[in-house]
Length: 100
Image 1 (cartoon, rainbow, N blue to C red):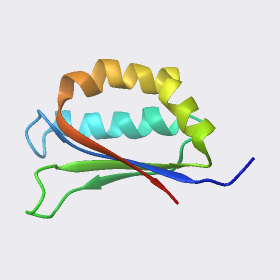
Image 2: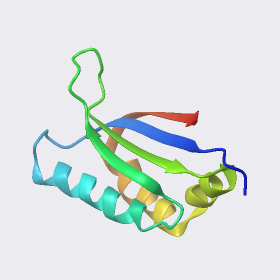
Image 3: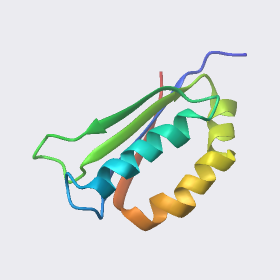
């Protein structure tokens, strides 16, 4: 296996009131669901603090190579989270992928 590490990051805002129970549950379920996918490494949840940016949160994770990244995207946990939570609760997002 080649070592072409990919850092996948998505910054986003939610429809929920900041500091609400719904906001916390979304972030917690995201962590629980996505870290259960075996290829996900170094998962982190970030809260945006800069006034220069319109997004409020970030998820970041790493994959050892493109095949793992593709496996993550197709994994049932990821697909279900996107369909059931992401599409209904995220108001805007920006996805950024880096080669490490």
